[in-house]
Image 1 (cartoon, rainbow, N blue to C red):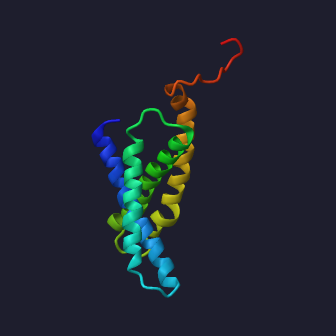
Image 2: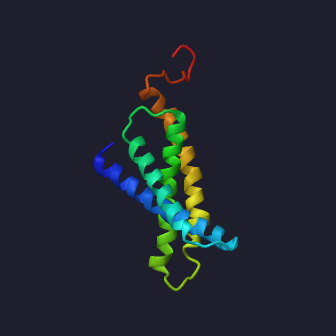
Image 3: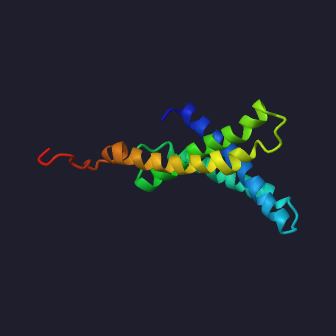
Length: 141
């Protein structure tokens, strides 16, 4: 995969993981009556882990089923989250609940759809690239 595309995918994943983990962990800590500042540290650690995972996994051409599902889920989920979180802020700034679209709808849906797409990609192409024979569709073929 090209380096620029890998970098862009990793950056989008880092930003979305940073915001998602910050807001979710901050809300949980606030609901428990604890200080909110640990959510910053938690979100930075998780974002660094997601960025490292995406950067390393997009480099390998031979990915297994689990890696394809994970990479598809993280990348499409990140794009869905960023679009749903920042889209309402840009296009409808007066809507005070706009970013919740990315947190509760487009992010999780993108995560699920990306995982399914990663599995489909692996079955259609990834297994063949890894040296495994694709299943025969017709008998004798």
